[in-house]
Length: 263
Ligand code: ADP
Ligand code: MG
Image (cartoon, rainbow, N blue to C red; front, side):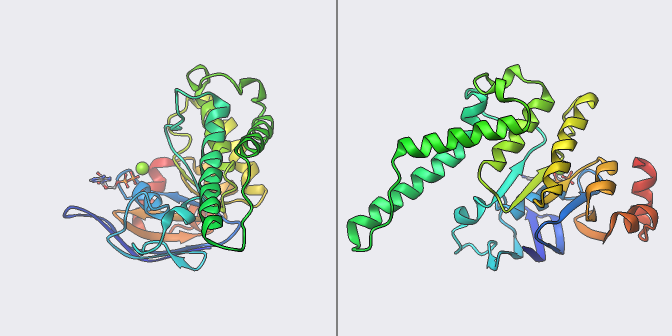
C-alpha cells in the first residue's frame, strides 16, 4: 500500500531522515520504535504530507505523494492520523469533532459536482447538504456506540478523560473511512490506567484488518499486535523484522542497547 524509497528530510542543515526505505502492506500493523529524536514523528508526518520530504519517493496506492505536482488532498483523505495530544477541537462537541471532516469533504465534493454540472452534459449527482449532515451524524453515533461513549456525543472534549479523548480521536479518524491510520505515540500523554482502553481499541482495529503504522513506546503492544517492527535510530531505519526477531534476537547493537533500557 505504501512504498517509501530513499526518503530524506532536512530541517535547515539538520538531516533528520537519512534515507529511509520501507513498505507497508495492506492490513499490516507496523510498529515503529526507537529513541527520542530519532525521526519517528518526522517520518510519520512525511507519510501523510504534513512535512514535505527533501528527497525520495512515497508511493501510496501507486501515486508518488512526495511529488509536489500531485494533489495530496485527495490522498490525505485516505490517511487517518492520531496524535499524542489528541488534537480534538475543544470548541466543538464530541459529535461535531467526528462529523467535521466527513462533512467538509462531502461539501467539497458537492461543490465540485455543481461546478461540473454547469459546464458538462453528463451530470454528476449533487447530494443535498441536509443529507450529507444526516449521514455523517448517523455514522458518528455508530462510531461512538462502538467505543461505548454514545452518551458523550454532545459534551465538549474538556469534560472527557484522556483515554476517552484519545478513543474519540481514533474514531474521528475512522469516520473518514481511511485506508491507513498513522498513530504517533497515542498513549504517551495518558495516565497509566487509561493506556489499556486505547490499546484495546487499537488492537480491535488491527484485528479488523485496518492498516496501521504505530509509533509507540508500548513494547507489549508492538510485540503482541505488530506484524512487523521497525527500529529507527539517528534518522535511519536500523533494523526491521517480526516482533519475535526484534525482541528475541535483536542484531544491531543499538537495538540491543535500546531494548535493554526499555524492556
Ligand atoms: P522522534 O519522534 O523520534 O522523537 P522527531 O521526528 O520528532 O523524533 O525529531 C527528529 C529530529 O528532528 C529532532 O532532532 C528534532 O529536534 C528535529 N525536528 C523535528 N521537527 C522539527 C522542525 N519542525 N524544525 C526543526 N527541527 C525539527
Ligand atoms: Mg515523536
